[in-house]
Each structure stands twice: as structure tokens, then as C-alpha cells.
Length: 135
Image (cartoon, rainbow, N blue to C red):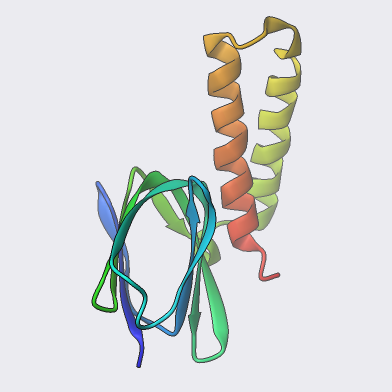
């Protein structure tokens, strides 16, 4: 038995296929989904969705949204998504370092709007970079 997974962003269908196991980055932590999982809806955080199929893991960088699990069908609706294999690792790492530098320059600003936006940029860059890694 397998799962059917659809990952949809506003501008594209990022993934549409089957999986043996899925690990979702929910807002309450990582959530493992196997065939026969109970029906549920969960909020998705900025992070990496992992998909196991035929013994191989694929990664998808997610930019927040929602997921629904029902009858071995998982639908993930997100603000943005990108397959890890389509991301250039050196560029993603450089983007992460730049975002961290910008955030560190705002350390003295408490929870200012600029600092919150900088933290979100770090989270997005980290998700993109982590999606390029196979471990």
C-alpha cells in the first residue's frame, strides 16, 4: 500500500505521485505519514518535506501552508515550494549565509518588523539549503 501525494503552490504543481512514507514540517514539529494514517489537517511550517519512494528520499522545500491527509491521499497546499534536486547547493548556501548576516545586523532591534522579516528570510533560505542535502 502507498500514499498519493500532491504538493501544490499557487503557480505550479510541484509534486504529484506516490510515496511509501512522507515527513511533513508541521508547525508543531515533524509529522510522519504512513499508509493508513488517520484523517487530519495540519498547518505546514517553512521547512523540508521528505518523500520516501522505493528506498530513496526526495526533498521539497516548503514555504508554509496546510496539509490534508485522508484515505491515503496527502494534499499539501503551500505558499511556495521547490524540489531539492532543482536547487543549486552553493547558491542556496550563499543565500543562507547572507540572510544570517542580515539578521545578525538587526540583533539590537528587539522584535521589529525588519527583524521578523529577516528571520523569515533565514528560515526560507535554510529550508532551501536543507532540501539540497540528502542526509
